[in-house]
Image (tube, rainbow, N blue to C red):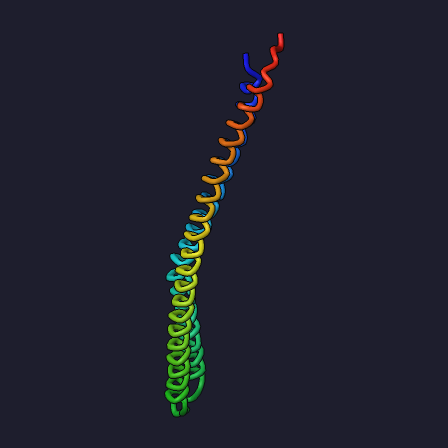
Length: 156
């Protein structure tokens, strides 16, 4: 029996470790991608919740003004003007809110596109590196087998 066969399990274990590490890295990149997509998917809910909070605050302010108005004499003035000012301020805040979210979403999508391009490039380089490592491992195994066969010592 040749000595070379005693090395085969070692080289196979190395190849298995390389392949498993490769798969784990790819799954990690996919997980990051999925998490980023989930984050983007949550933007609409977050934006809606913020808008509902602003609407609730506006309604509360109107209710407060209504209560003040009801507690004062009927000829009290200025409440309609106060309501108008409050509505204008909330409308301006709502517009800024929409613009801010649109800008934020646009920037996040651009960054995700850049990240995906970077990830794809990294994975392609990793694939090439893993392929080269596996080839080098197989060559080393073949050379080790040849060297062991050359010094074929019978161990019994």
